[in-house]
Length: 266
Image 1 (cartoon, rainbow, N blue to C red):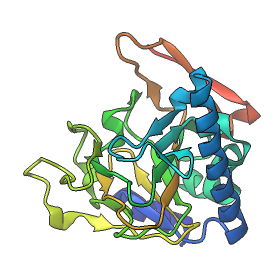
Image 2: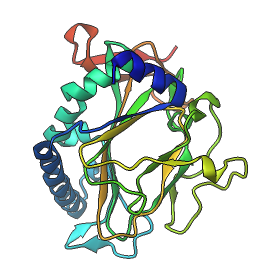
Image 3: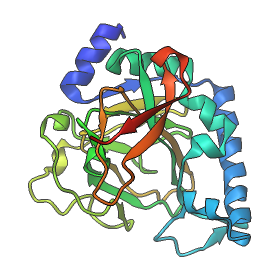
C-alpha cells in the first residue's frame, strides 16, 4: 500500500496490517530465541536473579512448568535481554512503516513478547494501552508481529476499528481466565470486535488508543507475538506522583543518530 494511503487508513481506522513483514528464516530465528528465553527464565528463577522480574508466568495455568520450562504469559524489556529482539525493533521494513505513521524520529517505549502457550494462554481483556502508559498526548503506535500463525482459535488480536477516536477511557485488569468475557462494560458491543488473523511473519500496527484484546488459546499451538511500541519525541513523559521525574528511551531512528533520548517531566 502507498505510504499516504497507509497513513490515511491508519488515521481513520486506528490499525494497519503489514503482511509478510518477516521472512521464514527470520520467523524461525525468533522462535528459537523464544525457546532460549524460556530457558533463561528458568535459570534466573532458580538463582533468584532480579532479572527474573521481566518474566511473567501465565497466571491461570494449572501447570507451573511444561517440558521442564515455565509457562509464561509475557517477557518484558526483550530489547535488553535478547540481541535477536533488539535487532527486530529496528527492522528496516518495520521502521519504514512506523515512520510513515509517526515521522522520521522514532523512540521505543516498549519491547515485549506476549505469549499464549498451547492449552494455557489466557484472555486479554479489551483495553486501550494509553490508559496504562505515562505518555501525553496518547499517540504511540504498537507493532504486533505474529511469530506463529495467529487465528481466532488460538487467540489472535481483536480490535474495534475507529475506537481510537473515543478518547481515553477507564479499563480493568487485562489478564483474564480463559472462559471470562473480554469486557464487563455493557456499552462495548461484541459485534464491533474484529478478529485480526495473521500468518507468522505478518504484523498489525495500531494506535495506543485503539480498543483491543484477545481471546484464550485452548489449542495445541502456541501463539507468540513480538510487541514494540514507538513514539515521536514530541510526546511527553508524564509519570505518576511517585514515578521518576526523567527517563531515557532508546532511539530507533533519526535524532541525529543518538542512541538514547532523555525525557524530563515538566
